[in-house]
Length: 103
Image (cartoon, rainbow, N blue to C red; front, side, top):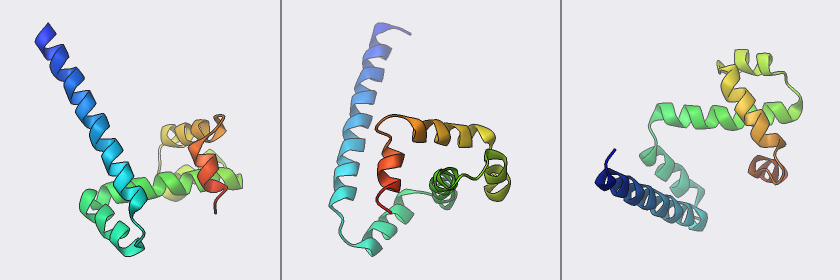
């Protein structure tokens, strides 16, 4: 990789970070559940929405004490995805934990 490609990668990462922050700010400001759902359905493919939903459901299952193998079978997920969710849930100041505490 030459130096101009590195600059382009750095600039691309900055643009992606900027785009994500803007997107998160906009989502945070949406106070209409229907608009938020419509926005998600525009932004994500049906398969991506299924994947996002399953990832949240697996975190809730872990919280309930369901075994990883049971979760894998129920939602047809890899143990790798479930392990990742479990590790994220165990972290100090876990965003998963904070959101689970809200429901």
